[in-house]
Each structure stands twice: as C-alpha cells, then as structure tokens.
Amino acid sequence: MLGKAKPTPTSTVETQTAKIGTIIGPGAVFEGNITAPEAIRIDGKITGNCSCQGNLILGTEGQIKGNIKAQNVILSGKVVGDVAASGKLELLSTGKLSGNITARSLVIDEDAFFDGRCAMVTNHTTTLEIEDEPTEEKEEAKTPGAPDPEKY
Image (cartoon, rainbow, N blue to C red):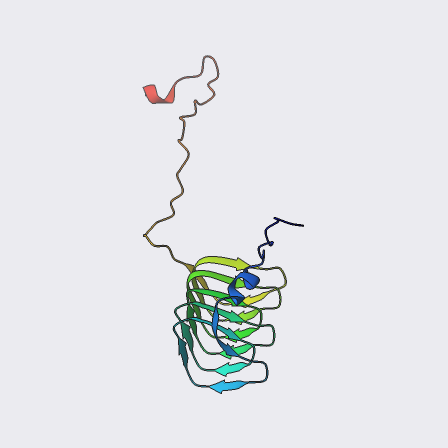
C-alpha cells in the first residue's frame, strides 16, 4: 500500500547484519588472532582470539577456539574460550559456549549450551544487598498466675 513504512527487523541478528565490515565465510579456516574496528560475522572456523570494537556475530556453522572481546556478541555456533562483551551477549538456541562470560546484559535462549561462569558488569559499582525484615519482639505466652522469671 502507498505511504506504509517498510517494517523494521525484529530480530537482533537481522538488525546487526546490516552493519558488518568483516566476514569469514563458511568453509574458511583462520588460524591466529583477528582484530577489527567494525563488526565481524564468522561462519567459518577460527583458532585464535577475536577482538572488535563493534559487534561479533557467530553463525550456526561458525566455530571459535579462543577468547572473544567485542561490544555485543551474538552466538549461534560453537565457542571454546572466554567471552567479554561490554554490552549484550546473546547465546541463541543453536549456540554452544564452553568458557566464562563477562557482560553487562545476557540472554540465553532455550536449548542453548553454556558451561562456565558468568560475571555481570555495570558502568558503576553496585552491590546487591538484601534487607532484613524488621524483627518484632514476640511476647511469650504467659500462663495466669505463673511466676515471671525476669523478676528473680
């Protein structure tokens, strides 16, 4: 119809794919560390650390054996190593991660695999404290005529 705006993508993966600067395609094998100033999409295999200032997207056939450091990370493939995301980490249903996570925000879909520890970070230091409920002095049930032990 005329005048209708084009629908915006609802999936995070669809939103991020429009801004990719580096692609490692299916079947490609890369050995060594990779660093990029923009977003990276990996559908092949990497043995080494991956670092980018933008987003890192790992496709369903993608595999990384090494540590990942990026602004936002979307994992659909397999990772053996630690992941540090200054923003959001999404582990989709086909994703498998064996390593530790450091992220500000974390989303793990049903059927995803995660084996490791997770540390949530924020811009400011916040400590989680649980407040105790105020305790009320309970009056002891006294039987009429019984001596009061506090008097003695």
